[in-house]
Length: 357
Image (cartoon, rainbow, N blue to C red; front, side, top):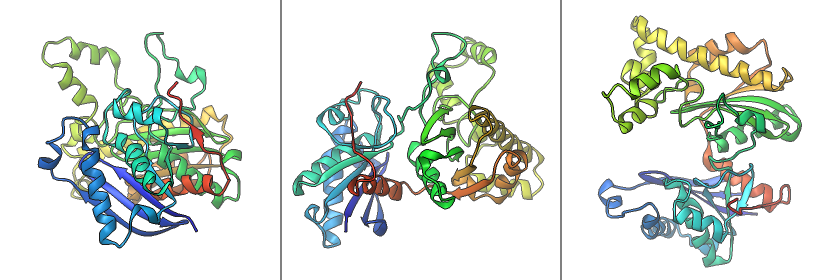
């Protein structure tokens, strides 16, 4: 039996779970007060505090680091890498510590996993971080050489649900073609071709459908006019693209449940925006279908918004002619991290090495 500790650091919390093989034995979200975190000037400087919180929690449950033969951390902002389970090494920790490619709470995942693993000479891994990049070369090109399309998306959940559906249809993930649409605070829609995500929208920085709080692709000339109007700073414009875009900009909320209630009460504008969202998601699904030349085993709808039957129904109406539509609502990151480690521990996959290049 493999006993695995999962560590998933977020901006104001640290999720911790214990797995015995595929079975989750316990899980908790350890919340951190803003006053506590404000003492630390950088994300990395929070490391001793977060480690102590995790160790204290384990003690309360009668556990210590010596009870685990594997520790898995959520992957952070690294140099672009291919999908897989990676051994935490010194190069990875150095890039995380120095926030070489960007600062985010998830950068602590690898560091915490490795430091706790050392107490038992256990193995430390990360699995499918947001920087997974398997795009084919021509998918990176835009209409100008100064602008390159980037792969930033919900890699962990995209890969996990695709593997689950592959099992369901009794095929290897590496033999399947899927279009996967993750719909949460951001939206990522990927073309999975024989085990690799060969094209994907940038779910973070203004590409693809709009989402609850991101604007997605917008008319670029209008964007330029606003940028040079003198009315907004760079930070204000960036916030319009990411954080105050999408549902927030149109309807003042990022909560799809509230929007559905608005529609039920007869709000036609809310209905228009909601329908426009499903229209754009459907359009991007169809775009990705062309990448796969129409040879699609399934279209997979996932993420928090996939709990909405209305949303799923509207998307199905537009895309079900392409392939069967599978719905996997939500996203279980902790389970996905555990399964990634198990594939290596059982010899089903080889652990990969991060070299930062």
